[in-house]
Image 1 (tube, rainbow, N blue to C red):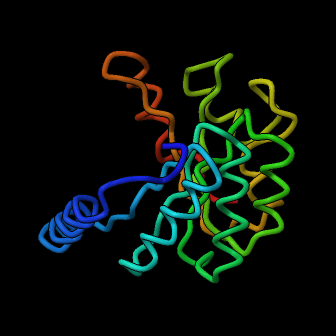
Image 2 (image 1 turned 90 degrees about the vertical axis):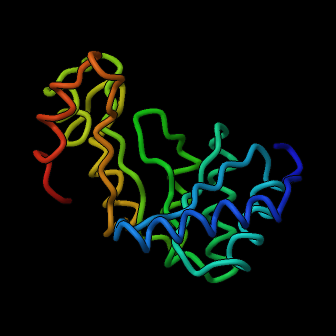
Length: 175
């Protein structure tokens, strides 16, 4: 995970299976690139864009690596198919700046509110300062130039807030 070392042949086989299933079902797909260092992020993005012209998520447990990923996607000219994962209540100023300065126009916008997990909390975190955030997630996304948000209702495991997720899933509109 730190150095971007993986079995490229096995990964390609898995990706080709995903594309085949997408063709069979008609459900679109994308690849989720998860890296734990800038070195790994660069290698994984390079591998994927050399393999496919499908969209891909830029993801990491480290905000600075996600920030690097959006900068790198812009640098190599693939920002039009990169999706930042995600604009959420814990996003750092550095990461927001990187997304804003990038050419990305798509990001997952997460409706997770740790302080209020019900429908109201999900709606509040998207539309106003709530859950510890200074602004609503949709406002952050708009300020970053995100014109193609992918809304994540922060679904919990079955029985743990499923009703709130279902209710919020179609209720928030677009920025």
